Length: 306
Ligand SMILES: Nc1ncnc2c1ncn2[C@@H]1O[C@H](COP(=O)(O)OP(=O)(O)OP(=O)(O)O)[C@@H](O)[C@H]1O
Ligand SMILES: [Mg+2]
Image (cartoon, rainbow, N blue to C red; front, top):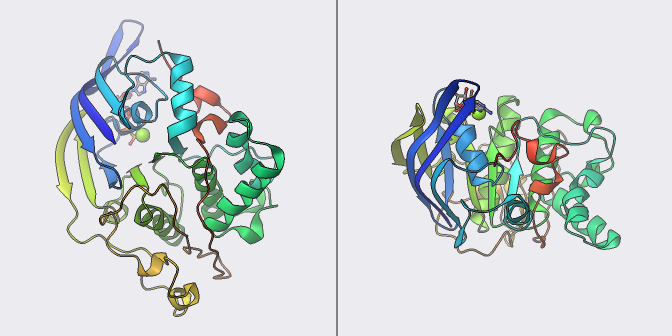
């Protein structure tokens, strides 16, 4: 799914030169759930931005879903983001003045989906992350965890080949962080390939593989033998409510267990909102969310530098 070979990223600002990534080699297969860890400044966001086609490497190659990315121009990168990548930012990057459902519709506007279909798919994606009852709230009327779930719904709505998330739990309390991890575990169980950046080992242990970075280099590539299951000690009933036929995150098997690439075709019942309500929905279809970022190519703080 992801094949990165001798990847390097050097930032030049004036006379200064910072090597953010040096000679990184990584393969991520379809259906894997990977965490990137490392100290501040070790190149985690730089790598995720390269994987997300938000930036291009200085040297080395990057194959995503069989396509060579490193030589692509801005227009090609935008198209790849639109079709293949769902990006979740630490700071959410939602538009504050429009409702959750309108925020989730944005990537589909870029993709040219008709209005009625957009609304239907946005509602479906919000239901998948357990926010069916909050879809008409604006971001300011939602908790941090709920806002992050809107951002995940937006990343899912175009059915990307890969979901990338830069510290998706970084601004959240422990409980909300668990809810987010439950959603990711459920998405992974239904076939999604997911790469997250995190500072917290407890969060990383919910994935099936941890990549450790230091000074722009990959130090360690460690499988997680027995991933933690998010919300497994959840209030009794959540799993049962989900019913035997659905994929409750609370009863999720080891994250990253052999999943075929059925592209998010499963159902999510990870809802863990204050009311403990639950939502489930069949998979959405379409392409991309990265285009929805209000800040466009600069959404991650830096543009596509050519
Ligand atoms: N646009 C930029 N211009 C110049 N240097 C940059 C730029 N972005 C990042 N860097 C530098 O590249 C290095 C890696 O930064 P990066 O943001 O990838 O680190 P990180 O591991 O994500 O850190 P954190 O945990 O603090 O988010 C740092 O030394 C940083 O100062
Ligand atoms: Mg970072």
